[in-house]
Amino acid sequence: MSQETHTLMFALPKGRMLPNALGLLRRAGFWTPDQDNGRKLIVESPDGRLRYIMAKPSDVPTYVEYGAADLGICGLDVLRESGRNVYEPLLLPFDYCRLSLAGPADRPDWPLRYASQPRVATSFPRLTTEFFRSRGVNAEIIKLNGSVELGPLVGLADLIVDLVSTGNTLRANGLVEIRTIMESQAVLIANRAAYRLKAPAVQPLIQALRQAITQQS
Ligand code: PRP
Ligand code: MG
Image (tube, rainbow, N blue to C red; front, side, top):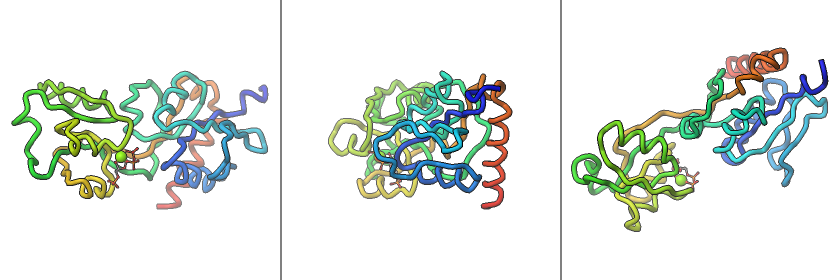
């Protein structure tokens, strides 16, 4: 087997999820880059077994579906939003949150009763469209890339669909949850072809991660 066969390309999510992802990989016995790795976007382990791609979290499923990465770690939320076709061999015990519909606290029963065409701000247009369509509500979806809670505060939107973890951001901005759309947590994803063709490298890695998770709990 060539060296390439043994080298696994692993897409890591930059930002909030990174410390947990690195921690799990280390506990499972794998070399990882430091948290603060400067501006370098591809980092190879000293033994050449792993090559990490430091990706924007929402792009991780894209790298993995196309095989630019064999494996990756991302949230179920961004995976479902991406619609990418990958394996999901292992749920990971961190970055728990939920995608929720929320609105101004003074009109908590907003959504489906008052507005025939509510305007909804979100970074998850696909899941939001699906949610309203399945309820027969003709919502106008306004895509924002962050600070979505601003939407109703400045009159841009009636409602938001965004991630909720502690609920602090909603509370701090006078918003309340109306419905949970999906529960999310981190997940290990794998390219479908690599999962089979690189099984000798992929399977032990999955097994080691699984064991590290079991030992931790
Ligand atoms: C995320 C998410 C919510 C908040 C939820 O935003 O979009 O706004 O965290 O966490 P909480 O329930 O614990 O308050 P983030 O801080 O990542 O910023 P962004 O929306 O601007 O990307
Ligand atoms: Mg936010």
